Picture 1 (spheres, rainbow, N blue to C red):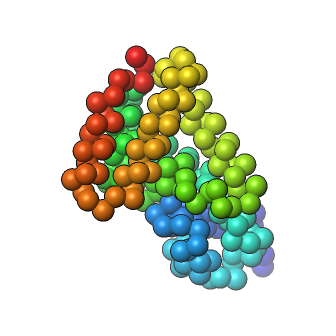
Picture 2 (cartoon, rainbow, N blue to C red):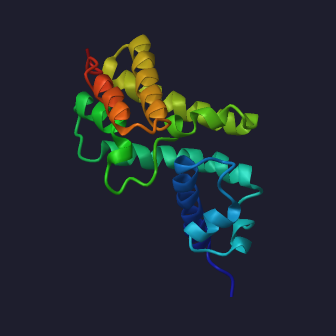
Length: 180
């Protein structure tokens, strides 16, 4: 008896969530299809029912990662621009936050990928800026805030000196609020 379409969608979503977690914590080259399927608790054979290639999975998982990171960061923030900014900057420290913002965590990896993957990343970045415009009411300021937030998180992920990392994030939290 074949699986119903809902089962297929649920299985694909499990794979995408597993990939979003692994790719944002490591990188495209460090993660294999087997790693993703193990994280999803599925067999490798199930992969090809949903994706053409690892690159196809990577492309689709970027949007899933962005949605999950957004939900994790916004959880409990209300409409406070300052709290949202601070939670974004501290996302690597949030409890139960397995998926990091793909814009920051994949920034150095994306430039080496094919145009379809870069298109998806560009769309996610555009959505990020649109969210910032909602707080700043100013497109230029939204781009500035987006660059500061993403850059700070991306840079903090490369530092192995925890004190220096925290100083960087603290300095960015002292920045003017998004609505100034």
